[in-house]
Amino acid sequence: MTAQTIELESQLDAIRQEAQAAIADTETLDQLEQLRVKYLGKKGPIPQVLGGMGKLDPADRPRIGARANEVKEAIQGDLDRKRTALQSAQIQARLESEAIDVTMPGVFRPQGRVHPLNGTIDQVLDIFVGMGYTVAEGPEMETDYYNFEALNFLPDHPARDMQDTLYLPDGNLLRTHTSTVQIRYMENNDPPIRIAVPGRVYRRDTVDATHSAVFNQIEILAIDEGLTFTDLKGTIKVFLQEMFGDLPIRFRPSFFPFTEPSAEVDVKWKGRWLEILGCGMVDPNVLKAVGYDPEIYTGFAAGFGVERLAMVMHQIDDIRRLYSSDLRFLNQF
Ligand code: DAH
Image: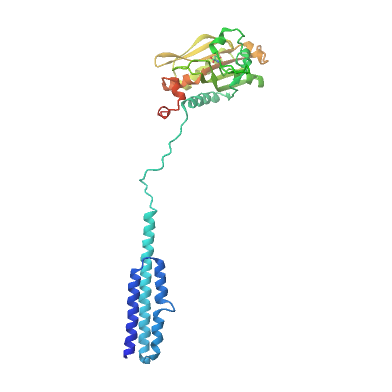
């Protein structure tokens, strides 16, 4: 073996060692690729060394060729192992940075809920819709005719005093009850009629724990041939049973201009009689006002305040809580 052969061998070994150290120091895949080009590329050091083989003893050439291949394979092996290591380090880093901590508190969105007044209205309407009633509505701004006159309130009748209202500059008024919709609906529809009417009403009342100048009512109207007080009583009984359960109820004689006879209905709730609603057989004068023949058609009506009902059912002590939008109160429903 000649000194030249030994020299080439040691050059190859030096390349191998230099590459090994450089690869070990690499931190990125890009750098690694640069090293691959540098050590194994066509312009790399190994072909250069092999270029010097022409001066060798021909017997030594295979030896150097074999050694060059060993070195190439060793460098290739180092590159492959390093690439695998860098790739898995990269995946590991990504897993750590993108990890989802399922125990971390989520983004809190408070859940909305139905206001107790709307909940009560829904409950009442569900019961009447279940008995075949249709939901109807009417305007809050009304004329004297719909609010009073057509409902058989005579111009100077003292019953008007119980429902003092707010008059608008044009002579119209804010309706004091949802009974207005009885007239409006009957004017536009023929019997048989079964309607349930939710709506906001107004009174010139001083606000206190049980009074509000704006509140909600639900009105019931049924008109047909042959309806009697028995039908009224049965309907009210079913409604109150659905609402309160099987509690004692009583009908007390009362007066409303638009019903004859009229009654008020109480429910015995926690040992006390609670006045829940007004009702009665529709007065023939009301039927005449909308052009129905009272000899053919009869009917019954009922009306009540939603706030009162909600307050009884949920044991709410002050009506103003229902309008205050205080979440500490509303979250209880
Ligand atoms: N409109 C009455 C009020 O606001 C309530 C009422 C009583 C309605 C008797 C009716 C009824 O339909 O028959 O005080």
